Length: 260
Image (cartoon, rainbow, N blue to C red; front, side):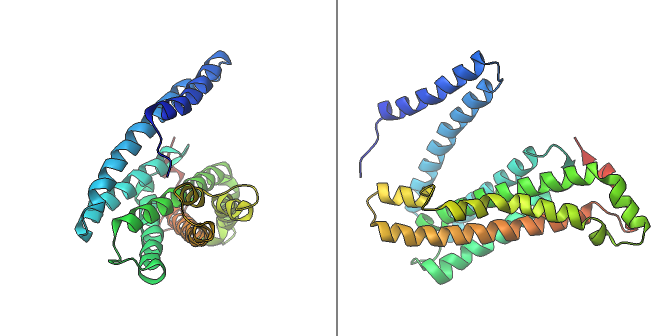
């Protein structure tokens, strides 16, 4: 494995600095976000590296619980932070949907497919859960954003359907369908382009680390299918829970539960 030095990373960071400078010169207003995001990347990844180093030296499942919960809660916050229209209780909805889909599929992969010994070995559990949460987070964030915005914009149409005797599920079916497609299209595109347009991240990392290409391919296929299922199930669960929150017990549309 070729080890990277501090000057190597400095060269890479200079590219982000050049992009921020270009944003400033073109008055795009993105330079501050780029610099903050870059700084967060360094700090967060260094901290994660230190935590993982300590975790890899411990083989007790109780060490994984606080780390996993922190990852889940942080992902839930990112889901809400991306919403232009925020639903009361939306944090619980997004976090709960990620917990159900990501944790269930990760545990299934560890117990049935990968089968490390012990099954909760951090070297496998944390990276798998991180990839699941990261992609599921994106699908849920995009899906919820589309559903809430479409429901707000099509308020009159949905209320007319309710007055015609439609149930809440029937009245919001079209926005739900559009939101589900929006949330799942990125991972569908990623699967369709894998190996032709791009080499996925995990496969690239394993090859750079010296793993045999075909072994890296098998792991990447596993990860892609896991991520697709986690994103799909998580998005559908989040959308269903969100739709339920948009109506009260009398089947009335409650947009007063949304904030900007």
